[in-house]
Image (tube, rainbow, N blue to C red):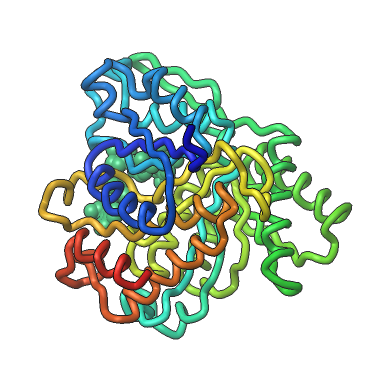
Length: 355
Ligand SMILES: NC(=O)c1ccc[n+]([C@@H]2O[C@H](COP(=O)([O-])OP(=O)(O)OC[C@H]3O[C@@H](n4cnc5c(N)ncnc54)[C@H](O)[C@@H]3O)[C@@H](O)[C@H]2O)c1
Ligand SMILES: CC(C)[C@H](C(=O)O)[C@@H](O)C(=O)O
Ligand SMILES: [Mg+2]
């Protein structure tokens, strides 16, 4: 029987399969892995009527790690009761219990001019959005009639404390001056008031040496664009993390470059955390899907690097993939989202050549 790590692969919809194909070539270039492909999203609804078939979930549960491309068609269904592709991702996150979503964002050397911010604001930025992923508005009670609708946001102390612990641990690992910025809306929301109390209490008890501040989410959104270097670790709830992490695309210059790791347990720097999920933060990008390789595969490739680091404990291979991406960009690789003409395949080839 093979002893290679077993990876469940869910390409999904739109550009998902395009970027996944590129990332798998990079994965196979750094080691031996057994890959099993499964359906999710609109592709799964088309074939089975459901966005996350049991066989897909069973495959992810049996795997050492899961790679997801993206789901969605961009359409809002006319019938609100019909299955939606995005339910597949949410159900997968819930079923795998991946509460800790890490979204690292760096200014990439040589790319400081690629985004809308002034280069001197972007240079040196190196932050992680730590997003709570299995609670809050996304998973609260909800309802809809012809005349009204509601979603509820609920958090427990335990849910807040376990994600805060991840943020403090990451700050400790980053260095003595690294700060945690906890983002909430405590001037309005009860969940945010509990969030702030729990984060501050944990800091006082166990992490008094880690600088901590609290920022309201509207101010945080503004500060991310005006002074992104003020942040090291941004700790926040599910919905705020979704929104703020898309905003961080202004730092490297494209959402196509951003990767994420979703963990069901605290980071284990030695072995990695089994049963985690790795996906780029972008969606299925229907506007560019199937258009001759307009999609950047770099966020998906960097998600493979995060899988190697956090999921499988293969730091050397993770570093190699990240360095290869940096090298390719430094040498001038520019996909369409960065204003260039390189296709997805050109980008993959440039990374493979730099490995
Ligand atoms: N994890 C996921 O599967 C995930 C995440 C976000 C959105 N979605 C879904 O994706 C669909 C489209 O959503 P959207 O358009 O709001 O967001 P999106 O992230 O798909 O696209 C936003 C913009 O960024 C561009 N873009 C995204 N990824 C890119 C890449 N790799 N290279 C170059 N350009 C890229 C797109 O062309 C588009 O202009 C929706 O159905 C949404 O629900 C899925
Ligand atoms: C597709 C959607 C459910 C998802 C989310 O909101 O979490 C996406 O936007 C993301 O950021 O991973
Ligand atoms: Mg999002």
